[in-house]
Every structure is written in structure tokens, then in C-alpha cells.
Amino acid sequence: MKHRFHGYHRFLYYTAFMKTISNFSSSGDAAAEGSTSQTKKQPKFDPSALYYDMSGDKFLVIFNHYEYQKTRYFKDKRPSTRKGTDVDVKVLKELFGRLGFKIFTYTDKEYDDIIELMTEIANMDHSKTSCLVVVILTHGDKKGVVYAADRGYLLKDVTSLLETGDIGLVNKPKIFFVQACRGDKVDEGRTVRYDGEETLVVPSHVDFLLMQSSVDDYLSWRDLGGSWMIQELCEVIDDHHRSYDLLQLITITTRNVAYKRASYTPSNKSTHNKKQTPETCFTLTKLLKF
Image (cartoon, rainbow, N blue to C red; front, side, top):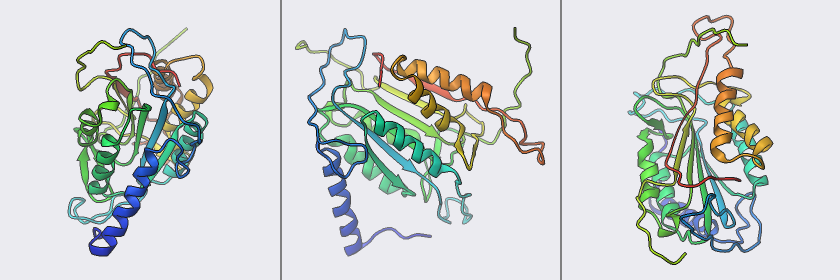
């Protein structure tokens, strides 16, 4: 089991972490991949506008999990290595870099580190932020549980931090893409035949979107070429972001995963030719176009 940082090592980690967060909030961040030195303006909030103002800074935060620890939570048995997740990270960084996002990738972080990072991100100055996208690539389980390197945690542990974060995040889209199993069932599929200045009180839970790679209780599929949802999502956004808004892009992605993808393990009938359906819930109040 990997130990937590202590003493001087913990100080060095915290110093490096704060430097990263400082860079994160800097409009001319050289450390963030995909960033530019151009100073962004503060996005306008117009409750009657049809689209979100995307003229400000846009951030992508990736929590990528490849290996896990042998801990008591995992009953002293290390969860399987997530081969192919590096392919997902690569395509995400390439796509969102082209879309003008500043990108931060964290690999194999423990639960406490994830919460610490997300707390700092939530509380930094977001006055010039237009959009925050968080991608979690990991194993998962039923009832909203996803895995950090050392233990499981609830997705709401992370999403709730943004509900109470900096006031600058209010009215800004906060997007979560989660590639993780939500159970151990497999989808057999079915064969069918087919031929201003005014004040406004805003609820804490608006302007969120959560897309998960499968419906509750079901497996998600991934191989050496990456995961179905992330690969399809990135391809659809890359091909159609100039024409369609995010919800339309997600609808196309869901269709592609559901209809175009099927598992291929002919030597194992229990997992061969199985299907997957992503699930999305949202409280967006405007349309979002990258």
C-alpha cells in the first residue's frame, strides 16, 4: 500500500500543488497543456441568452486511473489495471486542446488528493471562467461509487464541491464525463427489425451536466484502443462541434455507442457481443457550443 505524504515530503507536494493551482488560475498559464497567453475577458451573464458565453477561459481536468493500490477497502486485492486508458487521455487532450481548453491531468490520485485538488479548483477565482469540464476515468460500482487509487467514493463528493465553490462558477457550465462501470451486469441487447445588472437568485444545482458511460448496475467496456464512450464522444465533438450544441453531440454519441459498438470475445460467450448505453442527466439552463 502506498503511504500518504508526511512531513517534508508532504510540504514539497503541497508547494508543487499550490503552484499548479496558481498556474491553473493564471490566464497566461504556460504549464497547462493547450493554453495560450491571450488574456480572456470576463464572460457576460444574460439570463435570457440562448447560449452560454464561451469567450472566457475553459478548463479540462482529467483524473486518470491506470493502477490501484492493495488496500483494506479493496479487501487487500488490487483492482485490475485499466489498460487502454492512456488512449482515452491522449484523444481527450488532443481534442480539448484544439478547442482552446487549458488541460490538467492527474494520474492515480488517492481520494484525499482528489478532494483537495477539487476543493482548490472550486474555490479559485472563476470570474473569467466560461466552462469547467471534469473527466474521471476509473473503475466504478453501484450507487454512484467510483474508485480513487486507494478507495471508492461517491461522485457527489466531487460534484458537490462545485455547487458551493467560487461565486464565479455560478451560471457557468460544469460538465462531468465519467468513464466507469456502474455494476456488473452485461447488456445482452435485443434484435429488432428496422426499415445584465439585475440580480437573480440562482439554485445551487443548475448548470451541471453528468454523462456516465453506462446505466446503473451495468458494465462499461474498454480495450487497448480506449473506452467506447470516450472514443465516440471525442470523435463526435471533433466532427460536429461547429454545427451542434453539447446535448446534440451527446445524443449522437449515445446513439453511436448503443448501435455501433459491441464487445468481441468469441472465446467467452458470457461477455461476447454485449452492448452498452451511456446515461446523461443535466440541469443546464442554456445551450453550450464549443
